[in-house]
Image 1 (cartoon, helix red, strand yellow):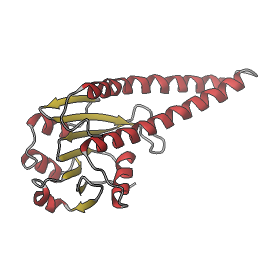
Image 2 (image 1 turned 90 degrees about the vertical axis):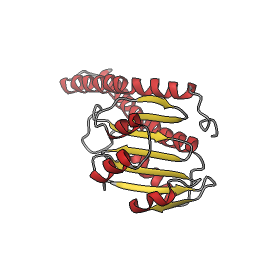
Image 3 (image 1 turned 90 degrees about the horizontal axis):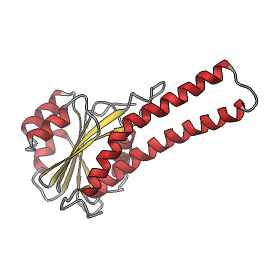
Image 4 (image 1 turned 60 degrees about the vertical axis):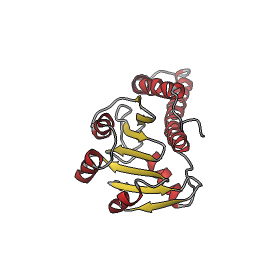
Length: 217
């Protein structure tokens, strides 16, 4: 899967989206549209723009560029800073090898950063290119979190299916390889719970925050 170093969209808040290049950002940053900018935070141009040209709080700058982060919600005035985790669906990936995304959201600008390709982000990009627009920062946040949670649910369902199959076979006999598989399933469940518990807390905090644009959608 191809990595995305940068992609940007200008959203007119009525459902239409226009893709823009990196060198066009400043042409739209002060307009009364919704600007979504997604960066690979390891790239020099991302670090330079977010640090010196984004105009956002230094706390947000640091959070968007940090390599390791746990799920959290931080309110900065009328702006929102989030860090979320999604499951890694790459071949041969492990449950603990989750992918993270950082988000700075204000009334007119969304900056998201990640190091690795996140399928939920790819899906949103594809929808925007096909004309399925986002009308508000709240709608963006709902759509992204829904897509990430939906993939997490899918992984958990598959783990449950494996567990059910093992339970059926255990009724007949218990073999060494089945015991190993049971231990592997238990380990995956424990790891997922440990990694996703902070995300649950972050989303609960988000639900309780009072931000002017958050209740639009």
